[in-house]
Image (cartoon, rainbow, N blue to C red; front, side):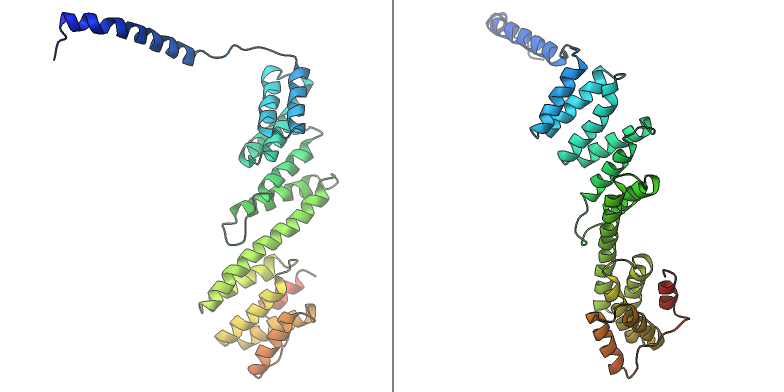
Length: 277
């Protein structure tokens, strides 16, 4: 190991000592936490509410959290938990909002605001629904969370809006099935396509995609040579959506094949449709 000469040590030491002291002070300052200062609960809550009014949502969320941290047993704390979740929702921090709402639901199942907490959780998922070309996991989560609202709190003021959003969510999920089914049909994978269109007919019968699904079933079954199922699909389509352009197309396909729409009680299509009414 190289040893410094006494002369070099005398030259370097005056410089190194102040630097070492500075580093030591810096380390102490970085590890020292800010002093805890308790403030009146009304003061913190009002600051948080003012931040919400000014649309400084992340600041508001932090202040509402501070209400609970400093005054966990006050009557303000429970409300602050819910408001923190709402602030996160407004800031588009949906994951943080969902975590906060789950915690509120777990801690306060008997709260007067519990229906609202479930509804907000559903909204957090609903707002993240993407186009039908992407993974629909969050769409399914939205459907489940909104379903909790209508099942648990059917008389709440949030139930009707939750039901409307469930319809839209189902329509979205049906749209995803249709997109995949059309792709399979274009590629000549009729059996795979039928599976997707069947899901729409059986599971999403109240959505706007059903007429096209019945037409695509007519098309796919004809391509496979399963004429009786094609006739049954067209018959259900014509009976329930007689003015639909999809029925006009299905009827034309059957005429080209020298057949007509015909009901078939043994067909899964007829049974599935009858089970709803």
